[in-house]
Image (cartoon, rainbow, N blue to C red; front, side, top):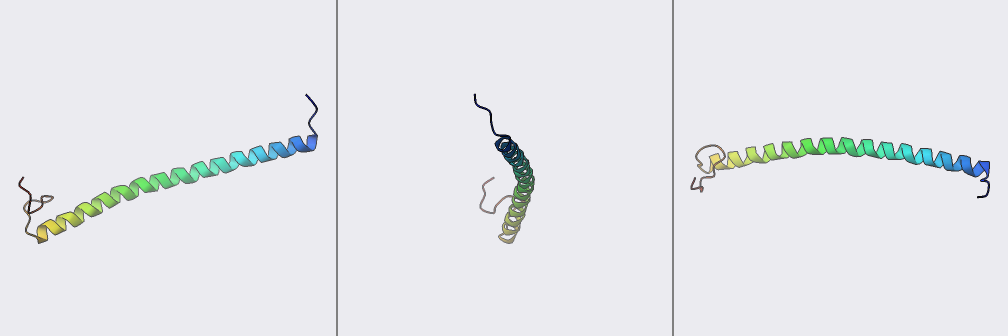
Length: 72
């Protein structure tokens, strides 16, 4: 195996370190987005459930969460 030029070796090390740092940043960003996304979905489910309850009450529905056309 031939000897690698020290300049090339140093360049490869720097590039490798940079890639690792960028990968860590990307992991952190994606992790933060997923945490916020989960909260958004939970909030969205609560919001739509509240809207449905309001519509049921306006249309003369019985108990909360039961549509007026329900046979339950």
